Structures are given as structure tokens and as C-alpha cells.
Image (cartoon, rainbow, N blue to C red):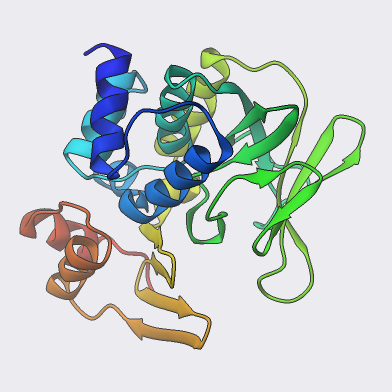
Amino acid sequence: MERSVITDLYLSRLGLQRSAPTLDLLERIVRGHVAAFAFSSLGPRLGDDLPLDLDALYDRIVVRRRGGYCFEQNALMFEVLQDLGFSARLYLGRVMVNGNPDPALTHRVTIVDLDGVEYLVDVGFGPLGPRGPVPVAGEHGTHRVAEVAPGEIHVQSSSGGDAVTLYRFERSTYGPADCELGHFYSHRHPRASFVNNLVASRILDDEVRSLRNHDYWVMRDSGTVTRTVSSAEDLRVILNQEMDLLVTEDESARLFAELPDPA
């Protein structure tokens, strides 16, 4: 399909229509995306082929509701924003919350320049990601983007109290080949996090739903409710009903059987 057709179908899924590239439209798209299209590692855990061309991304994320992570979700977002006339650039980042002091470039984000102001757009960081576009050198909710050194940008969250750097990226030039390398590692390398862990999340306006292996959280302003995933059927209900991911009974049984040991 042509990119414009995919964009219109995507917007329709979010209850939106094509219009001029404004901050209001950008906010609506980002908030709608993270609520509707679950972040997930279903593909890596099931060994699916995960091509990054636009038709495949649209089919996987929107039509077949299989979710995806940054190299998929933010790639789809990037194409939609460019088609709508936004000035969008892709960057690759280094995730800092995993404890590795020198991580690889395994996260993809987008910077949008709108009326002379730059905004970070990231719909692929899972439950810790922002609900909307975050101005560079500014804040959106509990997230802030700070240029801590010339060309080095840190994306931080203060949802737990003190500001914590989630990831950092440098102002450099990246292209599709760089994304393919990071994507291949993320869904094929035997030590990659998404290969070894089942994760899924949705960021709604009033709560964040997050699954990691045997643990499921629902986080609201009033507090967090946590429970243990007890069976393959329990897992299927969470994925299908709470995450709006389409998973068969057989797939759920396989996913549950291959969850890492809770210990």
C-alpha cells in the first residue's frame, strides 16, 4: 500500500483524521498510539520474522495486533509523521536503566521539529515511556529531555521520585541500516532482553499496564496492583484482553511454558 493510505488507515484506527501538522495533532497521535498498540516482545519470543518495511509494520502492529518494540513502533510512527508533513528525524539511543555503563545502540526514537521547537516522540519504550511528545529542554508529565552536554541528550523520568535517565542519544546521523543492525540484535541475539523475556505494556490515560514474564502490574495514581501470572490461560487473558494483543491458545501455552524461572 502507499504510505498515504497506511497513514489514513492508521489515523482512522485511532479515531483521528488527517490535518495540518500541529502540536495538538502530534499529542493526540502519540497518546492514542501508546494506548492502542501494545509494546511487546511477542515476536522475538515466538521466533517470528519481523521485517521493518512499512507494509509489514502496519500489518503486524495495527492489523494483526501483535505489538512490537522500539524498532517497530517508532519506525511506524516515523513514517506516519513524515507523511503528515512533520519534520521528523530518527536517532538511536543507549538504554541506561539496565545497569550497563556502556550500552549498545538498541533503542530508536524520533525528534520532531515543530515551529522551531524540538519534541521527543517515543512510542516504543514500554511502560516507562512518555504519554506524549516531550519538548527538548522541557517536560511532559513525569518525563523531561535534557541536553547534558553538547550533542548528548538524556531522556529522564521522575515518576519514582528522583529523576532517572532512561536512555541517552547523540546528535548524529542514523539510517535504515543502523536500525536493521540494532533490530537484528534485539530480536535474534541469544542474550538480548526481548529474546529472553516476555514483556508487554499499554500506557492509558489513567493507568499503565505492564507484564514481565510471570508478573503483571496495573499502575495508577492511587497505587499499583501486582499479581502473578498463574497459567497459560491466565497469560492469554492478560495478553488478549488487557493488552489487546491477538494470541492463540497454542501460542499462549508455548509462551507460558517458556517463561524464565521466577527465581
